[in-house]
Image (tube, rainbow, N blue to C red):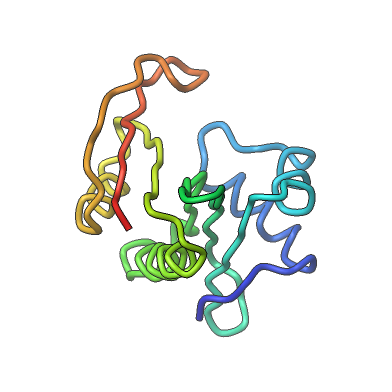
Length: 143
C-alpha cells in the first residue's frame, strides 16, 4: 500500500536510504528533505505493516522532479517502485505539474527501464554528475 510518509517513518527511511544508494543522504540531509524542504513530498510503500520503499519528489509551480526512488533489495522486481512512481505521477498531475524530470545513474539499468516504461524520454547525459564521477541521464515526462 502506498501512503504519505509521516514523522514516525524517518528512521526506517534513513535505513532504506543507506541500504539502497551508493552515496546516501546523511540523517541531516534526510531530515531537511522530509521536514523542512517546502516542495518535497514523500510517499512510502508499506507491505504487511512494514515500510519497504519510498519516493521523494518535488513539486514546484508547473513542474515536478523525482529526487529518489528506493525499494529494499529483497523486495525489488515486484512492482513496488512502479506503484510508488504511479502514485507520485498522479499527485503531480493533481497539483497541476505539467512535466516530471529526473536524473538517474547511467549504470542503473533497472531504474532506466522503469522510467522508459512510464514514458520518460532521455534528454541529455550529464557527464560526471555524481560525486564518484558517474554520468547521469536526464529524463523528462510530459504529464
